[in-house]
Length: 230
Image (cartoon, rainbow, N blue to C red):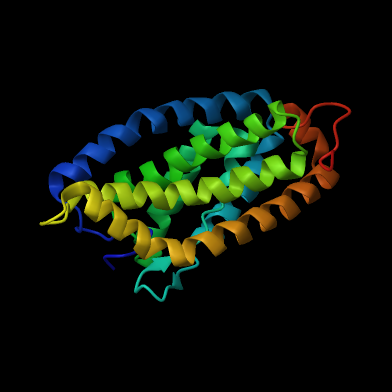
């Protein structure tokens, strides 16, 4: 599908497909190193990492049709980024996108680099940055989680729109006209989805603070003496 959050197999010109692969590979390499160090240092985190990956897979596999003719979906990547950081999120995102391309025909192999750049690089970087920015500004923990998940989701779709606009500028208006068109195609569906994902992530994170608090302390996500409701 042309107007989908996962850019379809063969849709991007070869040059752009290769470009986004080149952007993705360094983050993937750093993520693999980070996973190795994290698991080696704290083997108990394997279960939490696997559950987080499953959360990303399930949410990002939900294709929701839009009135604009596009398909959108939540990403789940905000939770992964908050817990494990942006580079590990790149690895999780690439694995999820690869399985979806092979098993569900969502996205593709040639466009995997582009889809990973939007969902597994830009999304996590925005999520992590917002999470710690809200906390640094003394905002409540739940608000930090909500902003990270919701705006990380929106950043993913904004990046996808940017990628499509770069590859397919409007014949009359050029890049900016194409960017406005692609942003409009996604926004009607993605904004309510992002809000919903933010709320769901707050709920999941609150449960984790109850049942996996020690793991969150090990990851540096929680600070001793600070409640998720503070």
